[in-house]
Amino acid sequence: MKSGASNLSPAALEDTASLSMTSALEAEAERLLSQRTRDIRFSPEMVLAYRTKDWSQRSKIARAWMVWVALISMAFVPISYLLAPEFLILTTAISGLLVPALHGCAYLVWRKPRSAAVEGLSLLLLMITVMIAYGYLAVAAGGTDYERFLTCIMYANTIAIVVFNVDYVWTLALMVCSTATFFGFEIFNPAINLEEAIGTSVFYAMGIYAATIARKTQSILGQKAFLMSLRSQFRSDALKRANDQLEILATCDPLTGLGNRRSATDLIEKLWRDPAIPRACIAFIMADIDWFKRLNDTAGHAAGDECIRRVAKTIAESVRLGEDAVFRYGGEEFLVVLAHASPDLAWTIAERIRRSVEALSIVNPGIDPADGAANVVTISLGVAFAQEDAAPEIVAKWADDALYDAKRGGRNLVFLSNAHAAEDACRLQPLSPGPESSAANSVRVVASSAR
Image (tube, rainbow, N blue to C red; front, side, top):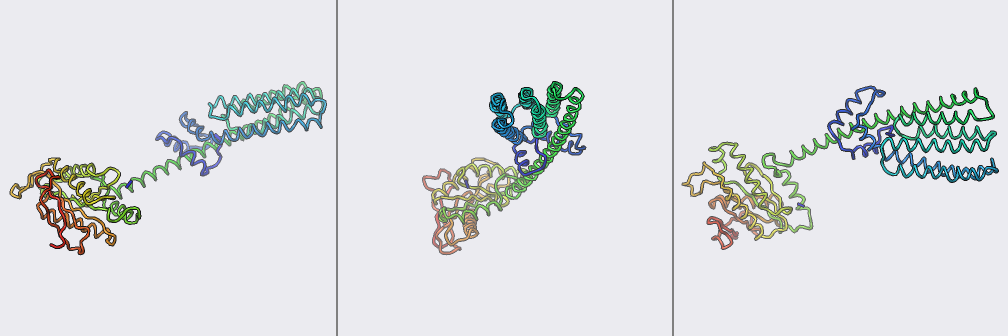
């Protein structure tokens, strides 16, 4: 009672589920998916959603690159001792200290989400600075090492373009700056002439441009995968909402908002299976609006529905919040299920319901004063407690029998069934109102052993 993904994976769907889904995003996703893949262009809102979803993967790849390149750069120091021992100090300063420090600074930038400009600029500055540093080392080494250093760093920049998932404009900027830096060092290479420098630069430019186009294609495919994951999430959310609505329709009464008979059955079955709740502490209160058919016949069904809504609200407000459950059992009949209740508590709650409904002062024009009742809506209630050997249907029947004894006793009464009766056919006899009851026609009821 109490931007880098290139395929549609479960992880992508989980990331997408954390986004704030809006109807604008849904409409844009459907529109973009209806176009050709190469024509996909995101709106600012979609770009923000895409970057938010893609941040985790994008940052992990970038930081992994920075860590491994820094380690490889430091590992190059002992190798350079074998290749060019006379430049060990310069190699140590550049490869062992400067390059790892630059990658460490970039790592700090990529520890939390940044703008697209900050991400792209940080990678551009990192790679070009490293390229210039190794170019200076190539100039100092000279000979065959000159070309080898430049080729290696150009190769590293080409891989970086494919690995780093940044906006296309920053990919292009890295390509142009890498090619220009390479050409700038090549034309000063004493081992080759200007024509060879231009030819070599053009050759590497073609390769790095191909990597740039591959990166762009990968980004577009990643965007399409994101759109597909968005659409899947939208449809999943819509299905969940539909299922939730069906569950509400299946378990709730549409007129009053209370649980219906099915949900009452489900709750009672749980109570019967719960070993922590003694059966003797479970009580059913059956309640039925008095003279309701006359109200419907004289005032109309709209007035009847309004009466049921107000009575249902009053009953729900009269029980223990978080402890008791109220259901519309059918027509103008209600069921209240109490757990951890004593006979005194059950009767007190039932009497509170009876008084509260009477206090609503809903006029029932169908009541004839000759019947001995006021022309306001009242309610009759029957209370029964469970027993270890009694099924829920039997307890409900006991409460129902007590309710109709209250009806026969004059209505606007509470009757308490005998929970220890030896026979199902036991009946009830009212006592005079005690000091605890302020209503003139309110009766506390005990069961007799026989009728």
